[in-house]
Image 1 (cartoon, rainbow, N blue to C red):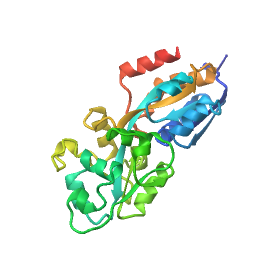
Image 2 (image 1 turned 90 degrees about the horizontal axis):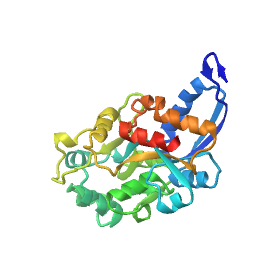
Image 3 (image 1 turned 60 degrees about the horizontal axis):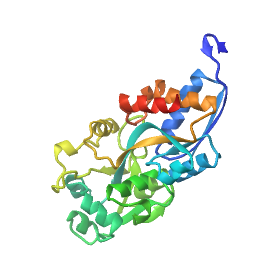
Length: 296
């Protein structure tokens, strides 16, 4: 049945999970409902772990998951559809006493490993060769989440291997670092950049990754000033993966509910035009056609 030439779509969709995907999912829901106003979409953020659990126990129609789906989850019926990409970045407080050295040297993988994994570096001077014995206050996520999983994966580890004071959720971790001049943490890019101005949010600074490990940030490693710059670097493969990663919407088995299938197919087609402006990275045409096939 159609109304004014528009196919009539009705029903309810419930979604929960990854903070990383939450802003994008909200935008997609808003745009989808402009076309199909009789569809109701409820979305809540609570971490990737909650998203996958809620989907597999049929608490929600769709779980938002910001990490790879584990083999045991696939065995239990998890049916993932990749919908976009983003990345996790290290963050410090804008009032960090040695911010100049940190920004010019960048974060080497070995340094990050010694901060979050082994705990060998306990002061800023050990990590970045600065003067004075100021301690590093390390923060990590307390909830089971994709951001922590992918940050740990960058060091060849899992979320439970990360050291630091545990803070719940992406907004919580950003706020903890924002309040602590000696703090260091990590966030999904959507929680470090302002979605309207595309600039880093006040109080925080993204720590550039010293990708080639030469102890300095060269011009080709310096792409963090704006969200658009970073998104382009991720799309071009200049920023490593991990901590860049695909984000998934997961159902319990292949989606049977017509309105859910319609929404997922719309996300992979018309919905992709909202991806970049919302601060995410589009999937390649090959990836999109592969994901569409999963739903047909």
